[in-house]
Image 1 (cartoon, rainbow, N blue to C red):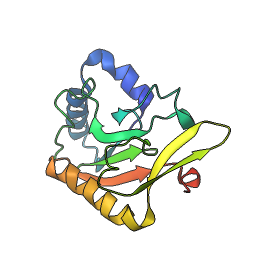
Image 2 (image 1 turned 90 degrees about the vertical axis):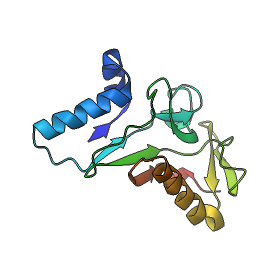
Image 3 (image 1 turned 45 degrees about the vertical axis):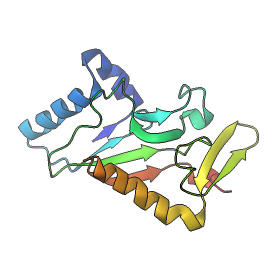
Image 4 (image 1 turned 120 degrees about the vertical axis):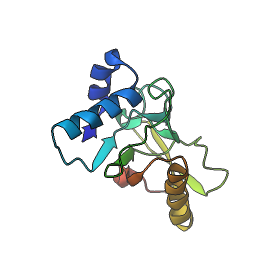
Length: 154
């Protein structure tokens, strides 16, 4: 199941997203849909600015944690057969991970793109720690998609 920004805007009138996700999971079960993962697109995490004002029409990831206004109780735990496929287009230059991992800033002239990328020698340790952090919180995360890789050259 994919959950992009428009789906979120359409659903917010019905309550916080943590409750809505669990209602959707219940609906899948009632319909006998074999959902194995739920992808949360570029709207759920702590970033910067309005998605339509930032580079690539997406907001960068400052910290991989759910926005409290959308998920007051955090990302809900899903049934054992369903995991999260989390998405972040790129990391903010002022991300919270810089104090532990080596990042390099990059930018693309002309469109205002400003992002930060883990350096090659830090990438494996960084993404391993990112997954472990989510697992420690009880979030069953099976995938993390980094987008715009063509622009993320340092």
